Image 1 (spheres, helix red, strand yellow):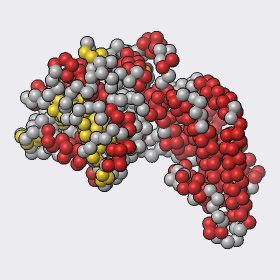
Image 2 (image 1 turned 45 degrees about the vertical axis):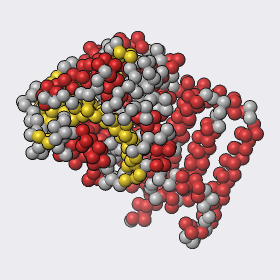
Image 3 (image 1 turned 180 degrees about the vertical axis):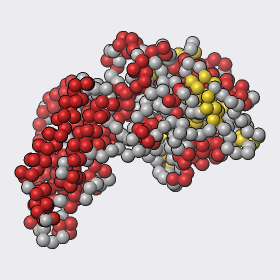
Length: 610
């Protein structure tokens, strides 16, 4: 009986019937959806495919003008492909022996380069002759395409970078793992379940289109598994101040004594603050409290049209400086240690420069810590491919009418920067394997972005990414003051991440070395995991050095690698600026309990009200 069932599943007619059943089951689901909702847009606005086609045409035209080089590259490609074919044939005709030992791997270098590619972790990609051949052919073709774009020396650097980015997106999209008939894990699941995984996958697809109100909004986690203030962002505290832009949270002390100098955290205002307070075991806020810091934190509002005119100057004045005023009033201290994360760090550097220009005094900020912060935007990574100076002013009227850049636009852009992890892996899991996404607090936070006021967004792109004004003396004016980031001598500590794709560490180092007093530490991992790395996890490690050579590469050569988290390393540094230990500053009953109401406002609710 078992043998008959096995034959049934491998019979071609059964397989055809299987797909007919899938269509039969999913057609009513699709019909029901189309009755109530408009069809989704098929192409994301984040990638300009017309722009890509133009660049590709220009690239091929120029490449064909050098036929010798093109012929050489094609010859190498076909030689390598022939070796892979020969290797697969040898494995096929030697199946009676141990194939792994009998065949000579003609593409070992290729495999070594891609050995940690999680898309091909299923054993069948190695054990099956067919899927092994498909995998190697894909690697060879993708690498060849990317190598071709590396040869595009006739393009200027910015255009070449955009072409390389688009080509990586294309190479990622055509991976055999992204198609049911060339993904062994999907095929196996389909045979095991009689196609139920595809039906469940289609149901998941329709739910995600419904969730996106006509656009595909891929589920990356179980949203019902988390609730802000109940199982994430639970550190005890009070909202002690509120204006139209911020809520200021003062956290309840966890030690008998606290450091005299308070600690103010300015998280990025294009994300929610609770990345720093996910769960107790990985909460930077809770850990800082446990070390004896008196922690205050800015919770930025999720802006709507009423804040469309807000700029960096307003975020500094109504956000950072107002928060400092309140911290000083509550604690009675005249100095505060400040942490700025990502764009919150960029705002911190603006604030320090402004204080120096306005008052010739930055002493109210005793020390400044910058998490993954860009000041010099010259080599600011792949985000630049979405920013074309010649089209910067296009769509400004539309955005001004709406009042803000929609949170989902930036969210989609960040996802494209890591398409395999943030897009394709979930397409396979949710829609092909028919599984529900795993509940993951970090991905819940990632799926909870914020809007950006129209004025600030345009200012950020033009003055920072395009013109790089912040790191140029007296080029950027904020609230009537010309800024010079080399002017203040506040002790600074930059914490960057080696695999950061949003604020590349070399770019953050280039910014740090422009300041008078700046220590630099490099964490392992990326923009988020490199920062949210508690000591108990003992992960990633970090590099440190007190020297500050001209280039980031020189710094890395002379830096010492350390195991575990950088958190204790940072604490040893900031302890020089914390003052004596004293009775804790206990928060009085505030406007509401932490985490407050601002952080709970989701962008979907704002979109509905517009």
